[in-house]
Image (tube, rainbow, N blue to C red; front, side):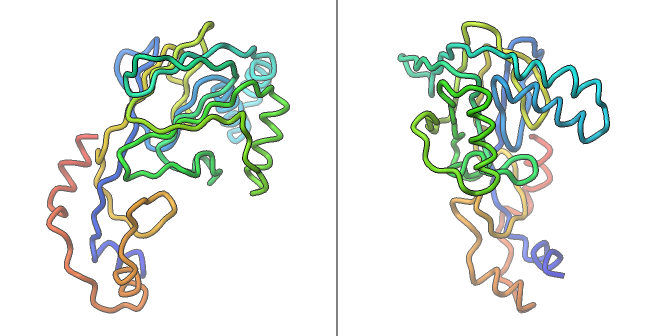
Length: 231
């Protein structure tokens, strides 16, 4: 009932989406949650195989992840002249704080700030990464100086050896890769959430919960169909 009331109240919000163009891709691909470079790609394929009972994929890609060697990543933010160089197995570009089954990968990321959030895991081996993400899942992870964070509108990532690129759990290409944000690229009806830097007014949510009269819908409602299809 509350979901129907939320739709009826129509608090339309402009949400960001990400876009990636990597080596081997014919055209850019839009993503809603998270993109990554490195070890996340074989693990994503193995995880999908595990969920669907495709054990051949699990057997093929888990060893690939375990045997992957670190590479030197060259990262350019917002077209800046300087390139940051970091050695590691994993870089995550997040549009949302959560990914997959609700795992909080980038707590600073929000979907309505016009920015993407970059997290680079510097000199963290496979066992160290596994320990880190188990702690993240358990909610016990502490600050780690090896996790380098930054925000920007575009990230260009190169590597000394080609690394796979994955977005929303699908492998799409390899480095070099360019990620960019499409600010306000998707109009949605949204309530509250930790992925919003400008959440819906509490008075509106209270009205929805109580079943009272909601404030009138904003003028942007009429733009939903055209803006959503353009993404």
